[in-house]
Image (tube, rainbow, N blue to C red; front, side, top):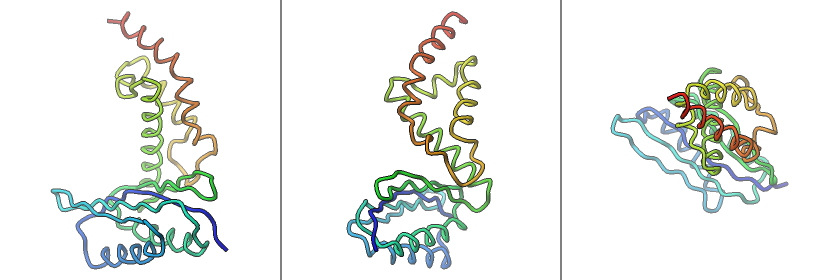
Length: 186
């Protein structure tokens, strides 16, 4: 039995040791079963490595998805930070969070949520970073993102958390108001 599946992630690893290399090779072995799957590594100047995984959406066996998930989970024990794996399964988008500890998983979830917020706000012409510099706006926006999309605690995300475009559109009016408030405060 097969399903349409695809995923992508970036994993920050320490300098490669033989045990980490064995885990990476296990992931590479699984990815060989998929057409156009890519696994690339980039060494940083401090000796750490970024492992980028791209698995394009295509028909995959359920056992492949399970094996891939286990291989990625195996790498999580070595990851310097938590990381998110964005995936599409039978047309439904989702994301899984990985890390050495519940705290690193929580941080990866929080960072993923803020990256999504920034991306969709930018499409609306709103720069989250500059908006967060406005004291009156910063805490309210951060609290709203945490309330709507989670603080990072737990492994699951709400279905609505994938509806970032609608959330960003709702902030267009608020951003204009906050920018006016910031100008009058100066």
